[in-house]
Length: 383
Image (cartoon, rainbow, N blue to C red; front, side):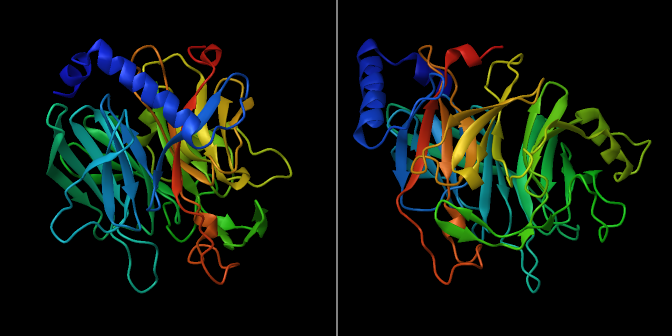
């Protein structure tokens, strides 16, 4: 089992692991410290990454344009396997979650939005195992829940609220869908008339900006984006509004109100700073720290990662290196081992893709695509 494999690491193995982490920090690039936070290259990828998740021994990275999910050795950052695709292959593997070791949840968004070929997302549950001695990984698709026939233009994120309840964000119409343990799908918060978006969740027009030295002019900012549960609240970000928001999980299940009326329970945690544009992505709370009030999130328009105090709305910069955080979109915490906590961040450089940025006539990608490790100031954890 994964946990047993971690416990069986010898002291020699521990020395090798720590040396490997130090080598990664020194081998390519380290970013500036922010209040004691340290950032360095965890691994480099040839394919554009998006979602990321991990257990004590493995790291899973969704590679949407390559149509695969890569499985990495946590300690070396090297690929050891690929997640087996369902019959017919993946559509657009976008987000991964590991609710517990041996269980992977994948949001396959089905494809990018298209007026001629609607994408049909699915939420796929895999069981998996890994033998650290033989480096053999195996996985089985246990369940696939498809959104056929539902008003979904693009599924952006999935959060595992409980073993019997997942939440999926839809970012174009703007809404939250619930996937239940029996495989049924119901609206959590969704406009009563899909043609009239909810102000708190829907998309909107977006002016042109410059990211780094690259003009970015998508014309449209999607609505609700990244999700993360903390306590009895579901936190989320919005590309349209910027900022961080929350809503009680109980609201999503409230049968006394319509899905549209439930939006009145949404509260602002940290509003977008005046005079700026932002689209926060990859929301993540430190694992194993239920009282921690810091939410960590990518700030891709400004090529940095920040943390937000969910009690006061105050913000701090974690890292703003444009190489290490080249449009950060996916964040996950590695389970704590040997007393050290690390946050992994994927950056997909999507502002450099002509297909997503009409201001470009051709792609201006800067491979390789980096996965960055952040070792935060311990004083900021456990508040």
